[in-house]
Image (tube, rainbow, N blue to C red; front, side, top):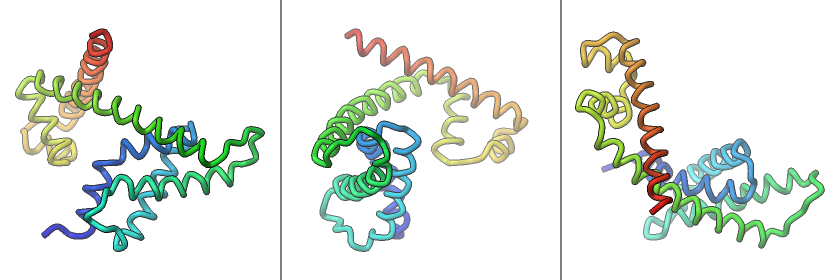
Length: 174
């Protein structure tokens, strides 16, 4: 049976991008959104015993994130522009929906691009990102130098980024 930590980590990582989209819609700053999502993760972990597993984890974490963002915005009220909490909540929900659609498009594009990799490149990606191995471990496993593995991963990431961008442009046009 999976540990409490493993269950939480899996659920949180599954929803982290959508949660970031929601928070970013509230604060409009990537750095602030990252900080708030990190604080949300800490708070959610501390309260994970209170989470009802028959309910929606994303909604639960969004509620926590909303309060973390509102706390942050209250602290940041030095700005000359003020928005009421209801407007901020609606803007965040709208941004989360848009973000979710975009993230889904990116994941679909990534999936298509991953299928285009050569078997050697696919093995490197599998070792690094699915198995979580470091470059030293991969170099030992595949009998390659560590710098060769690093260079290959850099090239693969660059090629995947270009491929994803082209897929998204094609999707936009269709």
